[in-house]
Length: 351
Image (cartoon, rainbow, N blue to C red; front, side, top):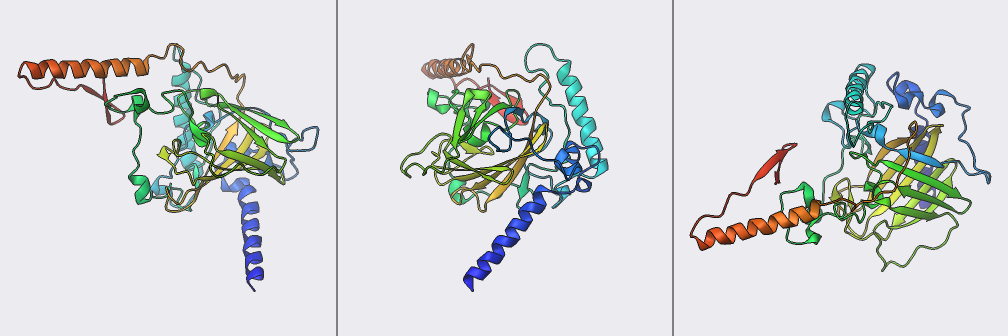
């Protein structure tokens, strides 16, 4: 009886997966990149194959086109994963304006806004409301390193984030759309897949040969990953993370289990789903989706993270200077000097 019940669950889950990966174009807004994907417009379209028969994911991909999609769904969309035609038209207009402003800039950080518009109401697709689940009390109590994006105080180098220190952005954060450097190169062999990220130059080598996972006592920055093919989808399961990186800006626990799914849906698009299961951090598991794309003439260059990077040195020097001024004022019987802040995106920052 139990076996029959579990089998029924597996069948239902499999059917749900098939339906979610083959949503008809009519479900998306007309003119959106998601509606135009080859897999949705042509039922006979097949992903290209490598010489050894695996679906071909190789190339340089970027999340630039996801910059206009929020992580959590605004409440006005309810349980809808996709915008209406009218809603999408408004977003497309906003994104075009952003591209025009971006292209008109001089100096660095130009041409970073992508070239396609998606009608996704949010990156989060599970739970149904499209919102990141609440944190557990234990997760809420964890300290967060603010680094150069906070107000200090900065006593030592370790007070800065891993991103500030050019160590890592984590297995999830490495591909999240940021101000620049949102690319990754995927390379395949018959028994492995390699993902090399543009920003902070992390590289993951993911075995496909069924080798056992490493021991549970070893924790890694990017976790220990094993991959396999589920039809046309590359499934990557990762564990053995340390607790010093983050998911969606939230520090996770060592118990994080990550499942990623890469599905080629177009010559220039890969649907990328990330399922997060961390009971010590989130009150329920959740999944978010990005469609990574190829961009005209996109190239990945060496990421010389610390070349000319004076942020930590200047912040630490400024903190020491402020401490000195406090001691001088105290010696004179004066109140401590005002700590000066500036407001950026609604938050105070020291300067």
